[in-house]
Amino acid sequence: MRFRFDRFATLYFVHPVQRRMSGSKPSIPILMYHSITDEDETDVHAYYRTATSSLVFAQHMHYLHDLGYSTINVAEAVRSLQDGESTKKHAVVTFDDGYADFYTQAFPALNRHGFTATVFLPTGYIGKVPVRFKGKDCLTWGEVKELSKCGISFGSHTVTHPQLSTLDERSVKDEIVNSKRTIEDNLGESVDSFSYPFAFPEENSSFVRLLRNLLVESGYHQGVSTRIGTARGREDRYFLRRLPINSLDDVSLFEAKLQGGYDWLQRVQYASKLAKRYC
Image (cartoon, rainbow, N blue to C red):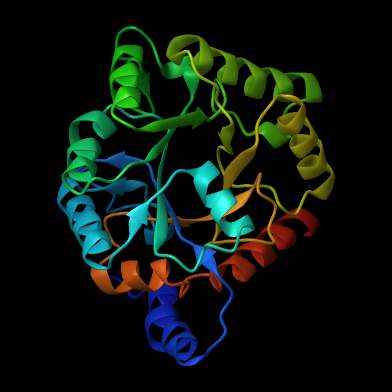
């Protein structure tokens, strides 16, 4: 395995120091998965990988269970943080992109432990028959309905999965309104959670304000982003931080992420975005 500075710093500096400190702020880990597959990502940097093998995912869920965690959805996480109940061992398991391997690989592993999850759907790729997105089949509406009856939550991941910050206001609104409406029409229940596609442009404050206003106007109550870290009570409930997970997350790194040991990387992430924006 290649040397990873983020793993080294987390396991040998940040997390050990953090565990010795008292009075850490309550937080909830929101895990960000994409595809549960054995896809070869050898040529992709560890930080940017989005595939998690079925074996590793099963290990993650088994370990989560052994550590005494229970799973909740995004709305429940927001309420827990606001009510000060976040000291309980809660975790949120999320999946972006609505891939069909959630149905075949992830759901059975979740079900074995009585866990739930939230799947964010790019509705333009969810059909009556499988539609391919980024080279993989996506869920069908039939599978979405079946999973919903089994306790899986669904949220919006836009219609076409664009980088929203590059669109005009009307197009942004269309993406978030139409995806919400499509899911609601197919499931017959309200959708109130949103997941931002691609890297979240937190350095672009004017766009973030615009997006938040549009989400509120469109009837969303909370959302998640690709900002790294565990979710905390004082952050904006529409852009909660998450923990990126993939096949390279061994048990040690996985546990450190759950306990906030990976949160330090958000500052590096933000500084990198600022540098790209102004340089």
